Length: 88
Image (cartoon, rainbow, N blue to C red; front, side):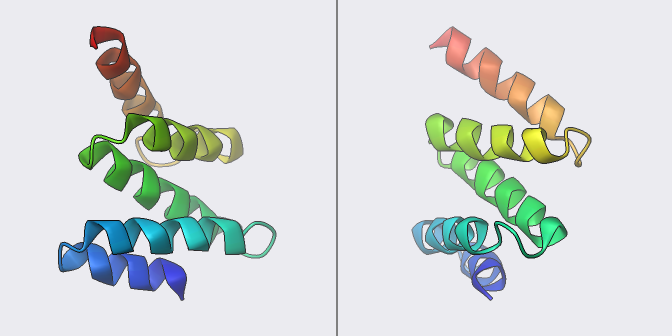
């Protein structure tokens, strides 16, 4: 439920509420549904990157990579984060 709420909030550009719900979903889905947890980690990482919260983005995308390194474009996103952090 929190994952879907996060997606809804993101669609209406309520980014802080979206992030709160994604993080709630990540915590709630620890052992239950692996695919939903991966989606929540991905969404949280992508949104955090967009909000320029690179520390949170790194945390979520790294956790996702630890579960499934081949998930979508997580490797490319982590590389992009590394280059952003190196240039600052």
